[in-house]
Amino acid sequence: MDIGIDLGTANMVVSMNKKGIVLNEPSVVAYHRYKKEVIAVGYEAYKMIGRTPDYVTIVRPLADGVISDDGMAEVMIRELIQRVIGSQAVRPRIVLCIPSFITDVESRAVIEAAMGAGSRKVFLIQEPIAAMLGAGIDVSKPSGNMVIDIGGGTTDIAVVSLNGVVVSKSVKIAGNKFDQSILKYISNRYKMLIGERTAESVKINVSNVFNPSRTKKVRIGGKNLFSGMPQSVEISELDVNLALEEHVSAIIEAVRSVLEQTPPELVSDIYDNGVVLTGGGSLIGKLDVLIDRELGLKCRIAPDAVTCVAKGTAIAYDKMDSLLDGFESVSVYK
Image (cartoon, rainbow, N blue to C red; front, side, top):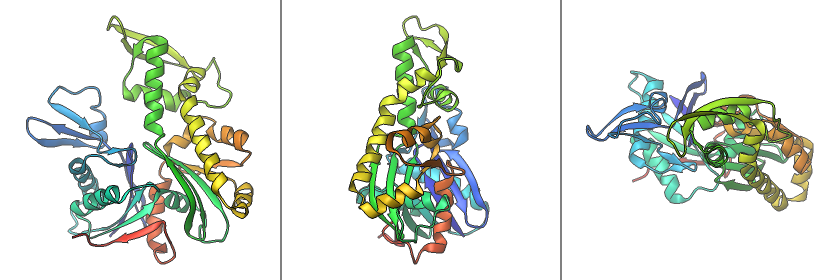
């Protein structure tokens, strides 16, 4: 049994080569501190965010695209793999996605978590390569393709040609940073505290980073910063644009930096082929239009952008012999 996992900061997406996407759940674990045990994983734990008593801790085992809590990460991976394979007594091979600029220590943490969760063999693949495979791009040709993968913890930008990464850059600005910026903006502008889930809902429903409107609004509820009493305000696209402006500009600057380091022939290819946006963060309203206008590059959002990387991990099994530096085999760690 071969499984591909996009082990994301925000969501863990599992795919199988013959079945496609089989599981997509938040990367969240609920831990009972008195009983010393995990009480919920995935969506069940996500529903508890902001609603737990003191003795229940909500843990996000990944931060900025890498494992920050080894024990909880192993529990989460084991639980979600178990949901996929059911009662079958098999130890699957697993392909795991990693950011393009991950350290050896961080790589080892990912490998050990997967091996501890019951895998018989672990492969690592860089997120940009997986994203391109999932988007249906033939990376084996001597032609430059650029991908911008905006996940929950990191944004990976890469130029790929002949199965290998030519130039890449990873910045720790992505979906979670967007949520935190919206939280901070609403606190400063409207003197109201809101929760993570409310901020995420605002990002999804009224984000527009190119020519935002003052009229498109959504009403949200929270707690008054001074009185502590319930409060509600209307948030417009312009508010969300002001909250996200700094982070979006940083991503565009990172793309510009990658293009500056890219050989001229490949830049010419990218101008012809355009740029592919993947990941949940790519669904920010009109982000593709903004990149087009700022950098003069055709920009398109990949089909199924959220699950694109996970699909690529499953496809990678058929391309093990041809993939170069984006794919690393790790069978045994002693």
